[in-house]
Length: 222
Image (cartoon, rainbow, N blue to C red; front, top):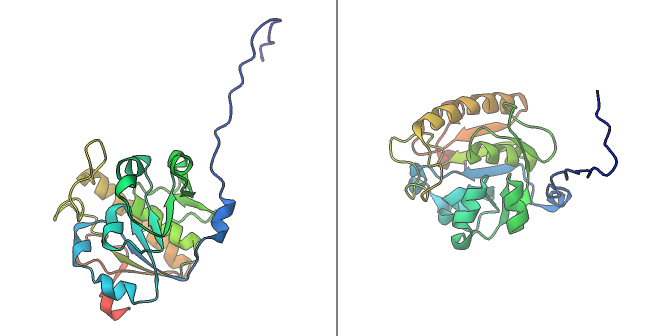
C-alpha cells in the first residue's frame, strides 16, 4: 500500500541522471572501412606507414594513440583512463567514450554502454560492454558504418606483457589474466553477430590469442 505523505512532511525528489546528448554524433565521421588499433604489446610491430597510406579510417584505443596520433577517432571507455591520460593525449581526431561522467567532464563524444547484453549492440549510438574498450571500439565502428574492419594490437594475452607501453598507471585495471580470458569469451559473441551482419573482420595483430576473427597479414589487405 502506498504511504500517504503527511502534512508538513518534506517531499524528497530524486533527480534523474543527466546523460550526454547523442544527436551530435550524427555529424561525426562514418566510413565502411575501419582499422582499429588496440594497445597490446604487438602494436609496436605494426606498420603504421602502411595504415596511414591505406585510405581506411583509423580508430585508436586507449594509449594506442601514441602510435597514430592523427587517427580519425580516439576511444577510451573508462573515466579513469581519461582522468589519468587526458593531459598527455595528443590525439587529434574525434574523442569518444562510453562513460557519461568522462563525456560531461571533458567534452567527449558519448556512446551509451549496455552492460548486460552480449554480442553486437545495434541500438543507435549504443555499444555492449564486452568488459574492455577494444570490444566497445569494434561496436562503435559498426555504429559508424563499418562493413570491413581490420584489428591490430589485439593480443588478448599477457605473454608479452600488458600493453605496448607497459602497465597502466597505479589504481587502474591493467589487463589481468582472468579478465583477458573473459574478454576473449565476450569477443566470440561479437564475432558471431558481425558475421551474421555481413561485416568482415580480420585480425592482423602481429601476435594474438584472439581466435574468433579471421587472421590475415596486414599487407595482404591494404
